[in-house]
Amino acid sequence: MSKQIYILQAAIWAKAHGFVDIMANTEGYAKPRGYGRQQDGQWFIPDVTAKQFEQQSYFEVILKTSPIDELLSKLKLLSQLTLLSGGELYLLSPKGHLPFAKSVAIQSRTMANWVILS
Image (spheres, rainbow, N blue to C red):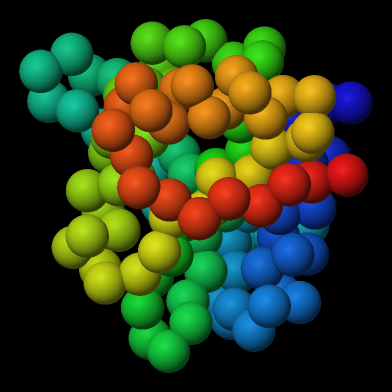
């Protein structure tokens, strides 16, 4: 399955769990705001963003096929944004990708909530 299908599942999960103002980096949703790094010009767009109790939360789908260096940088950025907004970071992964996803989260020293996608 492509990442776009999992991003759609993440947006549906967020809506089912009471999040509002959902933006997703997939067709049918408004695109989340991107964030750039000045030192190298690299640009990151969260997979899904949403609000709950006026606090911005970020959702990232992690698959084994994701480039690890880019993923580590993105998770560190999302973790910092979450701290600033008072929201939560959710890492979503299908069962077969979960060991890889957890190892990446440990490497990036990211505290997050886990959601297993089907």
